[in-house]
Length: 456
Ligand code: ZN
Image 1 (tube, rainbow, N blue to C red):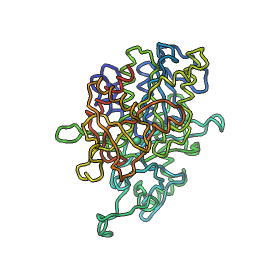
Image 2: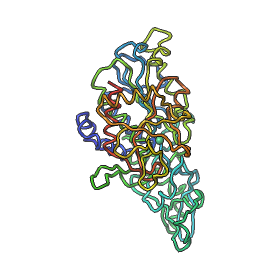
Image 3: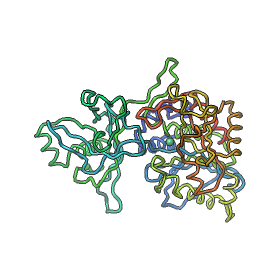
Image 4: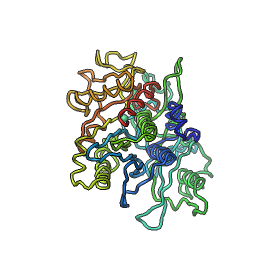
């Protein structure tokens, strides 16, 4: 993370640089949460453990981390929680990628070592070919007891793998459509090694365990016991495109990066929360960054779990003597569920609704679906429209072409856990789920302004 951006004044003045810096320091869901936590620490939020008793005070700033892949920050309101409720911005920390399987090394001819991987989420596979790929995630090593392994975040930072495409000479039809098998076509190559190197690596558990041990030991706190390959109990590691986020286009206004969906919304929400934290408010303001949206949100740290409801319950119990405070607060709450939207693509006009296709640079997008795939209804869309007006920001609508089935997102999944009104929104992006997605920087700055209106 760019340490110069950790001061609020700098974030306020350099919001685009803040987003780019956060994207670059968040190579996977674990690091997205870690980067967020560091910013929250720096601006005075206090960590709360789910296992402790909480005593929340009005105006207090707190955060809760779940599984190291989801994070929930909140500022307790100054008015009674039952009278002002919660103002929530939600987004997700995960993005499509490839995860390393256990026993992931495959030894081939000429000492070539490949990695056995599994696809996470619904990525556009062929955008992952021929790129520099790095590895990041979490490693669990032997701890004090079987139930308490030590946990280490690791990020190779440098590209350590690539997925080479088959030459066109072996498949002349490649440009006419080329079905891909994850198991066969998408195995990243770690390099080529001498027989001696391979024999030595196998003796100490393999090349990946050796890399992990190096990365862990480089970052160990002073006086910590060093880690050895035999200490590794398990890992959750993903490959990520190592090219940093960049700004492209003749006007230098298009943000291009891996993980724009949905870290761009997560960090726009974070920017809004910490900038508004300077100003007291009556409502309790919440930033909820869930994990596992790309696989249906059905984990303990996903939007389908009770994690956020439990946090809101504990806030109400801590702040109010009224036994019905939670229910009264929910009735006065509002949620903006922020997940990026599809921008009109100049090459595929026919894919879009004729009158409701958001454009890059056209401002925040409200998502609407007649069959309720989004939580947006007329009333919540009106609230968002009014917030945009108040922020002085243009807004636009996304509705699917009537013959195209669209995606879904966090909003409705969250409302199965707590029945509050809300709206699904996002910034319009190109190439959703590509290894490199593109978005407008100005749309994000506008979205931060609208989020700030909700949190005022
Ligand atoms: Zn998303």
